[in-house]
Image (cartoon, rainbow, N blue to C red):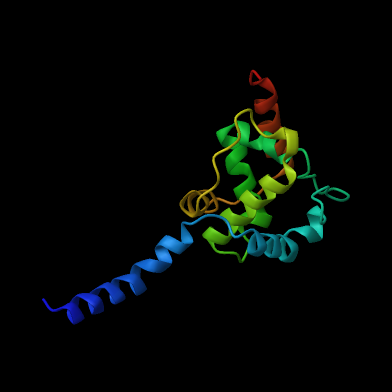
Length: 146
C-alpha cells in the first residue's frame, strides 16, 4: 500500500470516527447552559430555585442521585422525557444542572454523570403522575442511611 493510500485511508477514518471521540470528550458547559436556559429555566428559574409549584433544583437535585429510582425520576419527568433535546443533549443538561445547582445535596463522593444511553432507556417511560411518585422516591431516599 502506498503512502498516499494510507494517508487517504487515515483521513477517511478520522472523518468517520472523529465525531465519536469528540462527543465523548465531556460536557460542553456553554451548550448545556444554553439548553437549560431554553428548555428548563422557564419553570426552574435561572438559578434553579424553582417557582410556585415547580420544585427547586438548587441545593436539592443531588438527593435524587442517592437511589436508582431517584436517578431515573430526573429523566422520566415530562419536562425531561418529552423534551425535544436528543438523549446526549439531555444527559449533558442534566449533568450541567447537577454540577451547577446540586450543591451539598450531592451524595458523598460525588455522582456518576448521566450518559446518552442511560437517558435513552429511562425516557422511554415518561411519568404520567409526578407528585406521588416524587414523594415515594423522596421517602425511599430519606430512609437510606447517610
